[in-house]
Amino acid sequence: MIDSTLSHESIADLLAARFRQMFGSGMRMFRAPGRVNVIGEHTDYNDGFVMPAAIGFYSWVAAAKREDRLVEAYSDRFDEKISLSLDALAGPPRRHWSDFIRGVAATIEQAGHRLSGANLVIHGEVPLGAGLSSSASLEVATALAFTSTSGIVLPRLEMAKLCQTAEHVYVGTRCGIMDQFVTTFGAAGNALMLDCRSLEYQLLPVPQDVRLVVCNSMVRHELASGEYNRRRADCETGVKLLAPYRAGVRALRDVGIADLEMHRDVLPETIYRRCRHVITENQRVLDAAKALQLGDASRVGQLMYESHASLRDDYEVSCKELDLLVELAAGSSGVYGARMTGGGFGGCTVNLVRTDSAEAFRSHIARTYQEATGITPDIYICEPAQGAEAWPVEGSV
Image 1 (cartoon, rainbow, N blue to C red):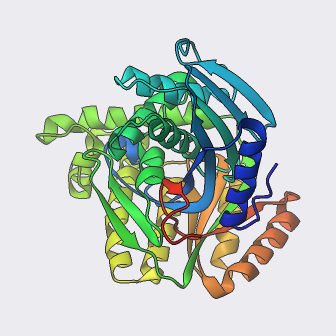
Image 2: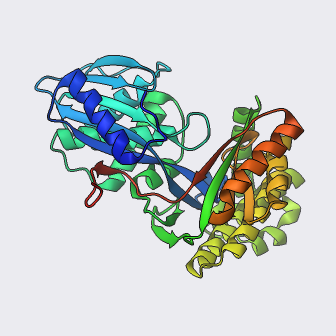
């Protein structure tokens, strides 16, 4: 296993050496980053707005073309080598890391592109189980490797969509487009505001003296998946109840807060609060975008706190551990804002922290959270990174 604390140049050198040892020379290298969602939670499936950022943890794939229709892939994370035939990719999810490789190959071929066989060596930097999108990172890096070694020109948006389909069909996770999109289109130094309906996006500069610090609560409550589905159903109910009162309502994206308040009496209280979260969260993303354009980290941080309160009280997807992490962050020096990120009921918080305070913040949260819960959190200091690319990039070595 390659040490992911090494520089990217060192990781690439070691991965190239591993490839030569296993398969010989002639390889090319590709990588795609993980991501964190700065603000905009549970808005994606309501045709709303999200604001993720790619982060500097990558999935790396060293690849070379074969003359047959086989894929030989080695993962150093699992220290395992698998063999796949490009003529026999069908089948349900197998709950194995090879599902990502098989799924990406299958969806590219089903889209009408004939792949060549390939030898692959894969290295993953993105922490597993931390909600930082290790899945989309691996999918997009693999898609880059397959298309490049096969001489296929695949538009970036099509690549992101095919990787999403691969995760739906071959991995069995019904994810939105956000993860694959920002992994593909992310840009160093920028967050990305995505319109989940039109797939139009805007790059927004994150101040250079700010870091995105991700704190993993290390807990995952059992009710997460069932409650997620229930929240989606609540939103759909809200749309059905509100649609007769306003033309053109297809999703909560189409409802303003004034509309919601005007017709509050037609909604059960729980449905009203679910709708209120989504509608106000969409506005918070738009407001955060304006704040980033002005370089106003304090305003972005305030919106993050408001987002967390809404997720906690109106959408009811937080938990005591996430609330504690946000409370500890709010009392820490150099912190602009904090909130839970992801589906909820455990997982991570994202914190907007001054660069010169980031290391002290990490130490403080690790100590105080452990004292309060007995759990040692994983904490990652991140900055917005470049999206999927071939390596070396121009000027990198």
